[in-house]
Image 1 (cartoon, one colour):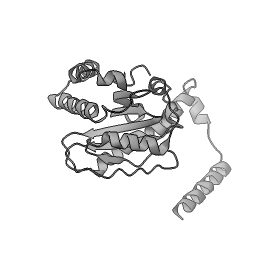
Image 2 (cartoon, rainbow, N blue to C red; image 1 turned 180 degrees about the horizontal axis):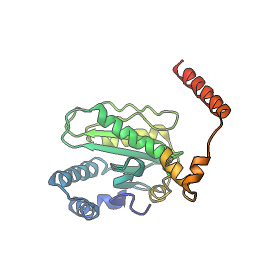
Image 3 (cartoon, rainbow, N blue to C red; image 1 turned 45 degrees about the vertical axis):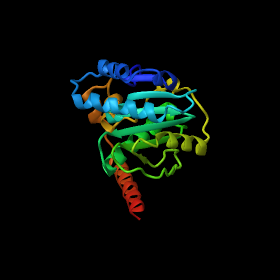
Image 4 (tube, rainbow, N blue to C red; image 1 turned 120 degrees about the horizontal axis):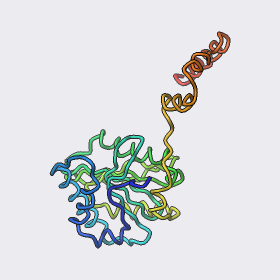
Length: 233
């Protein structure tokens, strides 16, 4: 996908670019009417990241603002690829608490990338929720079997510590951020989308004639009921 994000840059170039220039690029690529609140949020995000990560080694690091998550029809605020890890950062500028809905949002972005983004299938993904006015939390890295971590909570001040700690603990294989971003997005189609694709070159009569007999329906129903029972148990 050609426009995966509104802003994409190596970390090295990002730190040498002014916040106003970055916001100008974000504004140009934003397709809807902008409110002042949005530009202020971008300014805060840029300042926090440039201030917090300024001392990190920038080799092989890449940053994306407003990274598209097509299946959810949303954009992650910031994605940073660093030391073989994808950090998905969700900002809540001005928030004084870490709300569960925001935690789920950050985790949802990470899960979507893991399951549907080709370059993320075998890559550790760390979702981070930043509530800028909340109390600092202890960094607790809990990596699930699919290599998606439990969301880490931060107010932004300890962002470099979180990134360095995760990089040291995971020791992942490094990759190119640009190649990762453009590796392809393959969401599973919904039932309706699959049906539309299946019958795209057929007449309506073909759908009517694809009927199952009583025996097959009975067998299918019994199997489904058994699966439901087992799942409940």
